[in-house]
Length: 322
Image 1 (spheres, rainbow, N blue to C red):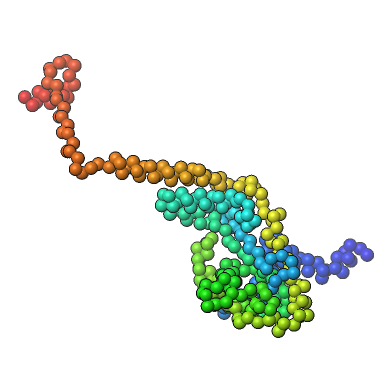
Image 2 (cartoon, rainbow, N blue to C red; image 1 turned 180 degrees about the horizontal axis):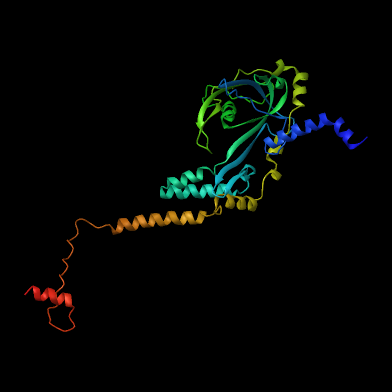
């Protein structure tokens, strides 16, 4: 079979490959992870709903937190995983801490605003059983990795450690003592951090847990089937996902235009001490209003000698005054 004939025979497969390549390009070149699930927000309706059940995986922790950076600088964009996620020294974190210290010491609001962009954003990952997906019902009944932010995480946090004493703590990841979680999204306009234009984003504050219940009414076989489908989440925070300290430092310098330690901890501490000393010196040297009046200065005496070396203008003024 000629190459042209092979090409003709495989034209359907080629189209599928092109579609996959185009999808990857639209997502920055990385293939989409089919395991990851997010509830879809209907921007036209300005709302969205879904119901999930958080699951304990057969391996690893119930959830993991990944801190990431994304900001613009004079030299370009900076993005990547924050090394503080894995408890390692992080150049961006050092720059932020030193910057905030100096801004506080000097009352420098401009520096404070500049350093705010160095604060990382948290993303959380957890296994869930999708019970209801209003926009994509094909996900219902499947185990997925739910990627969510701090607003959703706060509900988990409050369930584990309630704010009030009259509320019993709950393990949201328990198959027998957990509860379904209702995701309610309501549109809210906020300024885009990059462009400043108003954009519509989902707000989750009306979400919440239902009453505690056993998953599948405690059916062990059904629970085990779901349990076996859960994913180990440690891959999202594996050490190899993070650049070395020096790599991050170099990228930071290229984007921001100055090294991460342009405000060293030692320098900030010295600066604070100097400010304290200056203030003490100013207080000690401040004039006392009860002190004697300052001495009067003597008026300069004009030389009236008629010498040839006398300045012509001064001589004219002297003669004119006679």
